[in-house]
Image (cartoon, rainbow, N blue to C red; front, side, top):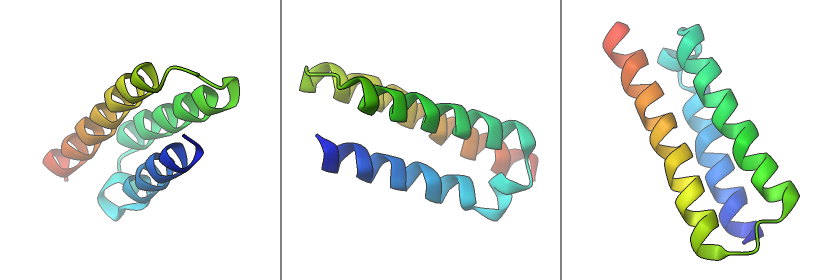
Length: 74
């Protein structure tokens, strides 16, 4: 699961680095919060792979929504 979590965090960081997101404080905050949550999940060591995927999927949806919000307000 370490590889999975690292990949997800990498994708989230890339989304946060997008210029349209960086210019939108609200979108940046939402993505930063999602990154923090996924990092915490990794740190506490969620043992159930299905649960981890479900939780991470929700955070990826939040990131996707933040990027869409940033694009629509640009």
